[in-house]
Length: 287
Length: 251
Image 1 (cartoon, chains in turn yellow, purple):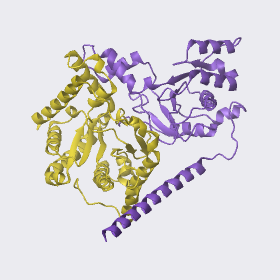
Image 2 (cartoon, chains in turn brown, cyan; image 1 turned 30 degrees about the vertical axis):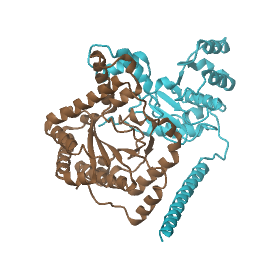
Image 3 (cartoon, helix red, strand yellow; image 1 turned 90 degrees about the horizontal axis):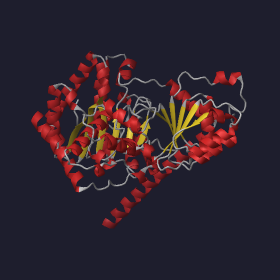
Image 4 (cartoon, chains in turn orange, yellow; image 1 turned 120 degrees about the vertical axis):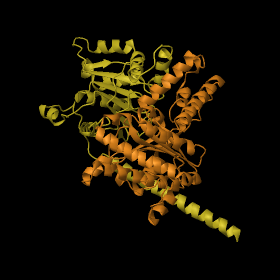
């Protein structure tokens, strides 16, 4: 199945979506796509089939987001903790990822036409080499796009992200690129894998679990978290619109904390720029 | 002609926006109705019996329960009740969080003392409670033995993202490269804290308000619409829901 597909909403759903757009629409939505294996078990099909359905649902959901005018989406595809699963399952998941990332490269023109920028967040060094190469290539071919952003958290945990940011900053201090007075919430914001995307406004977790499971623990401080008991492959446009509706009735509780970020000192700005440049360079070397 | 078109779009816009506002109103009304408690509900400390204990036994209890009251005006009377009920259910650590330092330790202590003075022997006043309060507490239990079974903390803006900035400040000049465990150690050195197992978010919105980002990676978040007039059964149901949830840790 392709990354870009037609909108699957029925006319009734489109009508409701139209009504929703007259309220506040989140700019950035994050998804924890949980429940693929439970879905497979429920339908008595192979685990792998559950993951394939999960991907199809992702492509479908991305269309709904575009339809509602949500510009940025972040999805939790593979956690570093998932390395604890059986080797067989991990291999199957990576095979699926390979297939989908290759498909993504084939659909380059379509993605550029829609202006979709794809960004992988996470510790990609822990992945097989060929996957890393595919990831770097897909990021580079779409990096100039700015109409819609898709961040895929792959080989990611929030703890790892924070540890990585700690390392970068302490290295900066040792090399005298930064001073201790530069240490602030903002500089940590700017050293996250997800930089420069803004924090999510709405986080949706399917399958009834009520945890973040180490996903964007830093960024989700002032987000509305919506837990739904539906399994991810069974997530419908109705569920999605209910989540948006709930966001609309709740965002006033935390919106005042979402201030525009404070300016960093010019020294810190230069440091952040360097970090970004280094990351881009390493992508070029891999691809 | 173009005027007509403008009017038409305006009319549609008006109709759709009012429809959306109406839907939100209906939902608010519905959730208010659902939340009403019609019957008076018991406080387990008031009518204790052996049966009561058995009835409220849970399979799994949180080691550290955080009650977050960032979205509401703080009512100490009810916070004290929550504390007493947590003690009844034998939760070892309870913390109350407000992201803008909105909870006063003194008032919480006085509210608890006024309602449950006989339970003061079982409480250990922890973070943010100054020596005066601890002294006052000791004075009140004069003659009885102090056998703390629950620790109470108040969490403030220091326990949000700033906590990590401060931890970073103390360790940024160390030589080694950080690993997860090293960061953990650094944070534990600056802010020793048991990872919360359950956070009860009071208020409409399920939002963490920056609470302990490092410690809440696998914490369960449950919502309680308001802590004002909270009943024991509502609180108990939250803990029951927690005891049913299973952790998988990525597996």
